[in-house]
Image 1 (cartoon, rainbow, N blue to C red):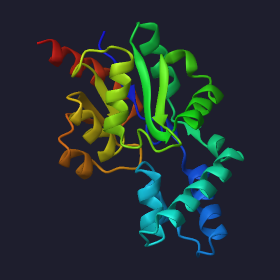
Image 2 (image 1 turned 90 degrees about the horizontal axis):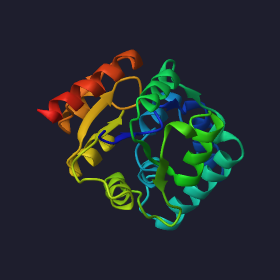
Image 3 (image 1 turned 30 degrees about the vertical axis):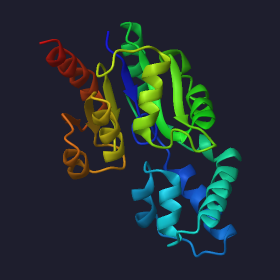
Image 4 (image 1 turned 60 degrees about the vertical axis):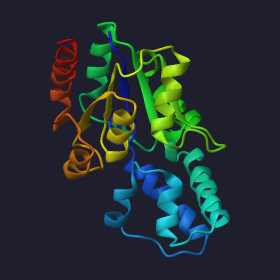
Amino acid sequence: MIPILFDLDGTITDPKPGFLASVDYALSALGEPGREEIELVKFIGPPLRNTFATLLQTDDEERVERAVELYRERLDDGGKFEAEVYPGMRELLESLHSQGNRMFVATGKPRGVATEIIEHFGLSHCFEKVYGAELDGRFVDKADLIEHLYKEHSLTEGEGIMIGDTAFDIRAGRLNALNTIGVSWGYGTDEQMRAEYVELIVREVSELGAAIEEVRRAGAL
């Protein structure tokens, strides 16, 4: 079966409580004013360094890196587990796994943190491996991350499905010639995903299994 790649934040789990607390901690430690939730939720999913460069309105790389360090400090102090698996997602992953699908996590989160989250929620057995950004900056670009994943597992280039909630996920999948499915329960928008030529958008977790099968059948034609 073709590989299925899942984004983590906004796709498998809702990370909002931990994300907001960690961003607030970083901004406060830097002497910056807090931000309203409505302003911050749009930054769930995009690369963290871009997020802090925007929030801090700076191109000072040292200041941005310090913000990232502080964010991760709060994340490691429990913030990473302040999340919830979306209703129905656990059952879907279990079903796909039982059918023999090859599944991977491909997230912009640091790989170690993402692995801990998947383990914390008892989902490790559903995935061959969790892939994420490295702390030294490698694979922050999700397109590079997917390319690395495919090389490491000797997967056939262009065969597979990338599932995510943001334009970043869809673009990364498309750049690797993968089929793409967008999910609307996360933090991106349908408009942004359509701008990246997403093939399908699903609105409920209960629809995702059928969407995967539809994309799989279309690829076999």
